[in-house]
Image (cartoon, rainbow, N blue to C red; front, top):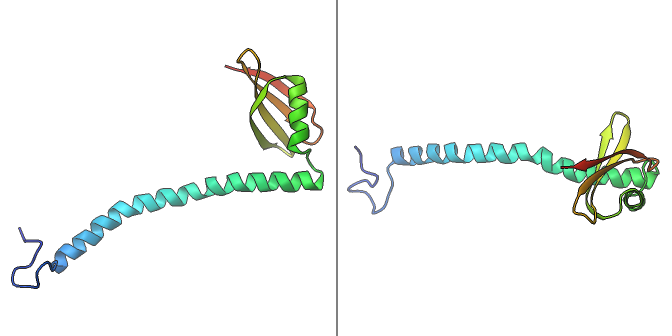
Length: 125
């Protein structure tokens, strides 16, 4: 087995073979991390893009603003809004609002994003 430090060279100088092995090991460790970061980028971008799309659709009048949708959802199921999502289903946009009622039950209120009309109301178990 060869020594990591070359005898007779400057103190602390690493042999060329060891330097190559070090580079290979570092590449083998960093490659999976780089791939994972690259794969997660579309997920992060799509979350931001969703908010930007919602703003543009609301500004153009294609969908109702979230404030109006929230009022409609709370009129249907009083409580506290936990979460809201804007989803595209076919050609239509739909808001999914999660509401916690006074009894501690969580409800999903699905509303048409253009009209605010109720599509679905269901309890989440």
